Image (cartoon, rainbow, N blue to C red):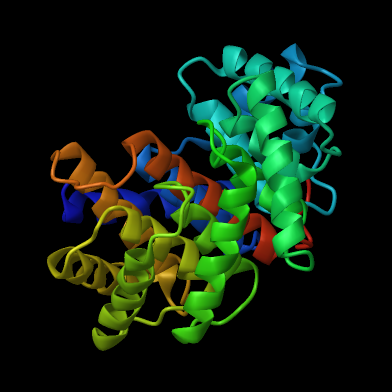
Length: 324
């Protein structure tokens, strides 16, 4: 989708979502849903959304995963994003059944039930995969005890699609973390997530990735693009694409274009995040992406980061029932 059509559909979806849910609903809910629908090349329909969510609820009563997307007590925008994910899925019911089964695999592997487990279920393959994820998560805690928690479970799942040495991989994450701290990155969960994603390429430490991600951050700053801690995982994805100066310039231009939209007024997080999504999507569609890992993993890395960005930083919003 060309830039002008993308911007037009994005603002249109935002307005339609706002009109349906009401402007009293936090922008932290409305913006992600608008982005989600726009990247799916769909126009939001509140009536269709409500009908499909109710159908999913009726067909899967008393399933914890479905309860998450239909009872909105003290949850975040995660509930809405998961609901939209299922509504937009080509085979919604089959996907619900897969996610419910994946929840069971994760519990059997030793993970405790939590909203983070619901996210992880989206990216899980099978029971063996759940066991590998549990092993990696345990190793991650050894190297970063205070930062590693339930919010890292989805990343542990994403990073164990293939066989790897969990001990080496976790140590490599910590090595990236220490190197990037020395490069001026701010410590915390977002930096840890970025370091986790860098191991998608290889479980062994690759020093060039430290240079890549540092150069990308500096290039965006030189274009007067504010890079916040929450953007670190997205910078890691760009590093995995071996992004060039031209790509970073495209992202900067798109970020500025997005910032002019009414929906992004005063927002300093989503414009850059959306711009990175857009440029990576366009490169994939044009077959111009030089990626250092497979495309599906790159897209899933963006998806995991989206879920966790919305959940981790907006948890606790006073969200009313979905259809009131």
